[in-house]
Length: 299
Length: 283
Image 1 (cartoon, rainbow over the protein chains, first blue to last red):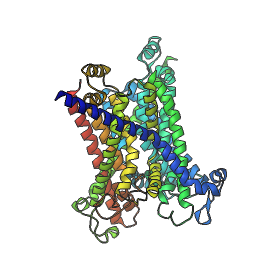
Image 2 (image 1 turned 90 degrees about the horizontal axis):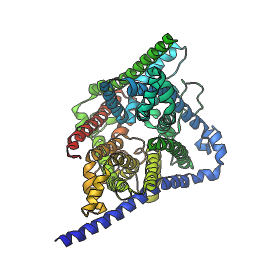
Image 3 (image 1 turned 90 degrees about the vertical axis):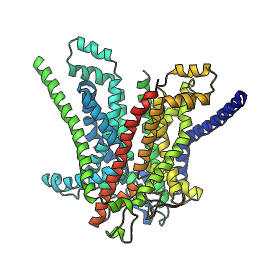
Image 4 (image 1 turned 60 degrees about the horizontal axis):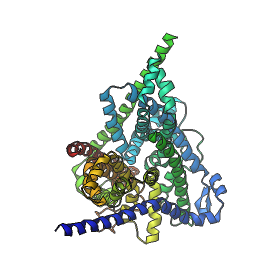
């Protein structure tokens, strides 16, 4: 019996190890396959026009075969920058408060809030944006500034994205700030520095790389967000001139034109190229930030 | 000088308090709006019926097709992610535990994949469908969402597996266990709460994502009967109905958003409770 069991254990071990090796190989190849797949699909377009012209031209008229991505790239850049400006200071201050000052129950509550905020699907954020942010900007904020807007604009997208980035940034920042050795803080306090001075000169200085990395992860999250932005940002293929103008970020371009892309030649190829741009930028961005985050965790 | 220091400290402390409170307020605000609008539009019909004739002009019916479709899709892809990801997560901590560099490289790769936006997976899934000659269906949706959630599942489970003490592995080896036995009986058991959290996290991501299924799962008014049928999903039901000009149809988007949010909340609560329950058996 034991011998029989021995054989079966050996066999399961062999089968499971084989499956394990296959699964790992699959995962290692996955980014490569995605990259190659997108490149192959965007080749027809790349053969037609040089990359440089496509990235710098803002002439988007698929019917005539003109595919200029500049307006979409600028849309993505602006909406991402705006969300970063809105969310980064808030997250940094909140993270300092929650790791250095706040009572335990508040930190616990905040973990719950972060958890749920991170879990809410982006389409629900989009619904909230349409219900709250868009009318707020159109009916109150813009008139107060003497401007007029439909509310479906760059700023709406930035606000919604900023809120969506909060749970990721905050969580990461808290982790980074926690990793600052307590001895350093004690040394600073014993030299007569106040709490805030210790934070300013010791904690933030020591955690700087980690803070930058955490904020970068928030940026790359915002860069790829699709549905919520698509719902509030207006989707007009023009380089936005102000925050109350409509914009058209890359992910929204891909998602929005799925319906008619089959009838126009090269259109699907153009959308695949947009996906390729996003994939390459975000993969690079994440690799660089993770590189720094890994170094911090190891120390 | 002293006074200025105290003033600065006070100023920033209050600023930080206000900012932290504002995050909580925004959270309450979002949940409040979704709950209020959703309950207002919620009817029993919404969750119990498929769309009837004229549904998209405000006539009778519900979104049962999207609810069931979403559960099928998220369930199917979570299962695939489990089959593919569980051995990898265990292997990284048992089979190759001595090969730190290789394991860290895999972690690095998975973290990079975690950040890739779902719309890119959607576009890739679409390209893959054309290559494999399958049309928009539950199957194509499951494949795409699996790619999307597998890194999330593995990394979430892996973080917990890393905390299992090495002494357990040595003890198990000394009793004559092989790697598979150690992985599936000792390590899996020890990291069970983390496993449940990881599964629920992956499921939640799968059910809430719209961009990856937009091209791949299609949309239909019926509950899919086979894996090759197209399927409706909740996020897309919300998205499509909200863009309708008819007020009754818009109302339904709010109700659907409430259903989706409720599912996510239930997942979050179950994850917390089960973690507490299964912690009892941990060394």
